[in-house]
Image (cartoon, rainbow, N blue to C red):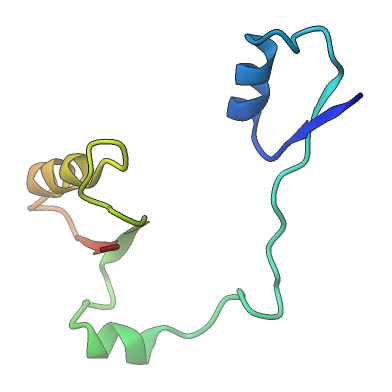
Length: 93
């Protein structure tokens, strides 16, 4: 038996379990670069009214405002950074 996890965090959790003596490897999830690749976002920035000189902090999660997903923390961070050139975008339900 050899356990493969997609993150170091999960591998660390396995190390704390009864499987701690089992070999563990981390293989991160891949990204399909035919779909996800750098693009010119000028049009999107214009549609969303995001100035070109602003950085974007994007947070995506289902049930984003739940305690577990941390949406409320992102809102607090946005409030702390209100004078910075950063646009916070939260996506979720």
